[in-house]
Length: 364
Image (cartoon, rainbow, N blue to C red; front, side, top):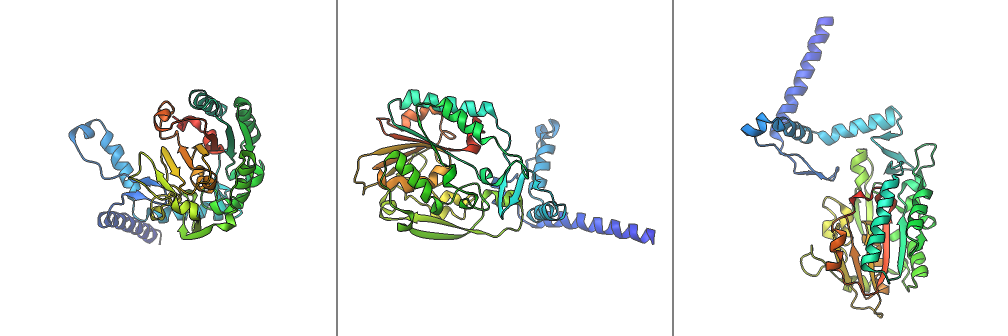
């Protein structure tokens, strides 16, 4: 009986090994993983130099891991085992709470926060020393999900205080009471555009803007949205519906930028099926964008220094401005911003999430 068991075990192992090799040879290599939001390693070229310096072995290992047959299925099995059978609270820092997925960012990096403050002070002194400036920090979803007991919690109070103390020249707008965990996507880090009524009202009050209520916009639904945390969690979670809001202003507006081909609309629904469905809002990651409002009844202009949260907020501020310019210094060095934007006393909004401020090293 023992010998038969050993033979059966060896046979199953050999079958899995040979079957895996066969599937790897038969199935085409994938260029990218939408679930993981990244390009996958491709079969490396074997050369004498890469073989001698050892780089070929490392590249081959990466390729075999990335192109492993049924890889996403095995990731799901591992995650289900971790969350539901072992009862662990997180899997590689990704956790599930109240039906929403998020990623832990619990250690305040004081040096990163200081770097953010320094970068903003430098931008202000060089580019817009006389402009009225509003700073609005977007709390990440963990602010509403973590309490320090079930999950470790970032010291948000220290972060907010450091930014306010370090930038005394700005009007600081606290958005924490205007949001809650269910106003963000369940499988993504971003807020939902159609849920930003209180945020818009708060900004309008402090920046002296006249803005329409969100229920006056027309909603367009794009079902089948999977956020960045969906792939990281690797759990069989349901898809969500992404909505974007339109009115006469957004439909007539024109978006231009050095990375775009000619004039573009505010929303890009064709990008919904791409690597990141959130790219529907203002065409995704862009260094500099300008939105022109031909229906504007004012000459006011706005410059937003922002991360990706600004992509869905900017269209809702457009009715109050003739022009909105968005600058993302993750993709353009700060010293070159003046070459793309003519600063002449416009309103300035500094809009960044707590995650980015706590990792400000990505700013250039």
